Length: 431
Image (cartoon, rainbow, N blue to C red; front, side):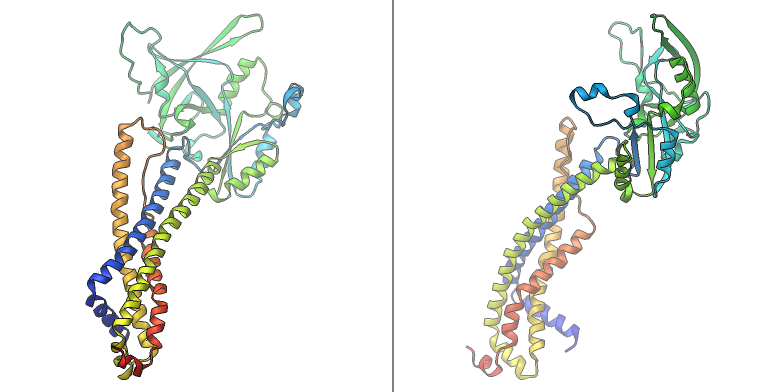
């Protein structure tokens, strides 16, 4: 018997008892829909949680800070400068030597009082010096202008203009509109305090040559300058020349090849005595939690499918009892045990397949409702927390249909074996 003949016969047999097949398939539909809905809900919650993490914009970067010895109580008072693991140029070179590291970026902050003014507006904010000339090298893109910096030329973050305010506001005046900083010349006033209480000031003018695209990270509020210029300012604040081999840098960003190795390299840097943090550690923790949740959710749905499997087994057992004489006739005209086994297994798998397709469609509809209700509820709230959402991964519908079909196949195995081993003479005599 050809394969197409088997398929035609299976479809014909299933269509002869539409009501019973439909009721049995509904159990599979419910189980499959439960699997699709619950797993999709876990995936959606995972994506919602990771997308709302502040500053998770680059999973291949590691932020490194000077290392401090672990001490508590009175021991804290005994920590000296020599006990601190500083980010010296030698440390930077040691980071570059780690396999998988592609770039090491030095970051140095302004270490003194700084006032920023533009026309009648004033601002506060942080200025960061980096040892590169193009911020694209650290994954930053511009929304206006360029990403290159040089002496007297700076690039600001997307939200840096929100730092500006009117120092002399009128009563009941409206909040100011953040100024467009592109192409503007910012007046910088540095203030230094001496030990005797006197102050000294120094003024600079910086031209904004670029505004960065939003990253939802620290770069949104920073003003980027070349490292040499920040070093010059800090030396003026300190009143002495800065020796990075002795004092070290404030912070270093280590870029690696892939997020897959970033946690391992972070651990290597920590073992060297420095403090290191990568967003990938947070993401991996969240992914681990939600992966466990997806397994639990999928298990709950699988229980519903197991209940449906009992229904399939019962339906196939009843079908065999009703069609015993038919089985005897098929054997009498030459059907083998394998032919009978294939037909009944095909019918059981067909019920699972139909239920799987129906379950995927129902699950998809439920996920659409969850997304609609979850989005509307979030819009009416304060916008905080994890959004209730469901996301169907591309593999889930295929897996669900295949799993439902397999459940049907396994459920029909025992009844099909009974049908295949019937003795033709006894089957023909069955009333």
